[in-house]
Every structure is written in C-alpha cells, then in structure tokens.
Length: 118
Image (cartoon, rainbow, N blue to C red; front, top):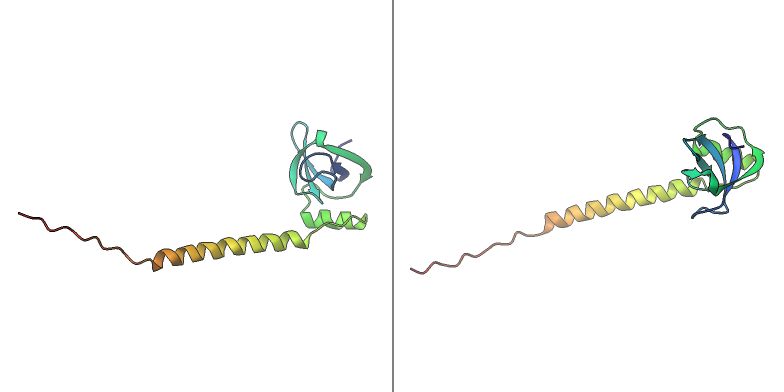
C-alpha cells in the first residue's frame, strides 16, 4: 500500500490537508514525504494514501517531486521556499556582521586607580 511515489494527504500536524508523495520508506512505520508539505519523516498513521502512484525515483529531489505533482495538476510552491531560505541566510549574515562591527567600535574603558595614602 505504501510505496515510493504513492500520493498521500497528510492528516496531522502543521502540514495537515496538504498533498505529498512518499519519497523513501524508512524503518518501522515511517516514510519520508515531500510535496506541498515540508520534506520530512512522517508516521504512516498520519497519512491517507490516495489511489495514484507517480513515477519518481527513490530519494528524488524536491524539484523532481514538484515536477511530478505539476503533471498531475497539483501546485507546489518551489520558488518561494528557495527565496525564503536565501532571505533568512542573508538576514543572519547581516546581523552577525552588524554585531561584529558594534563590538569593534566600542571604546575601551579606562579604570582609574585610587592613589594609595601612606
């Protein structure tokens, strides 16, 4: 029933009600899914298998999965994921650079020593 390329609907979690394809079968009751959902390990109890099996290779990339789903008329947000990741990485690098600049700009504090009275 659960095989590579099987079209499913997620039943639980943040990605519930979204369509996905089984990319790899893992140990126990787990499979690796990708598609409208995030590429993630998923318990088969959280999947509803549909009657379609798409032709994809084992461990297919997200682009291959998106292409297979597009042929079936299912839209996958491919470009947005890459743009969001790039923006996040850029923001992290920018913040790290600003923090480094602030550390360098701080003047050194001088500590005055009290004169010893004898």
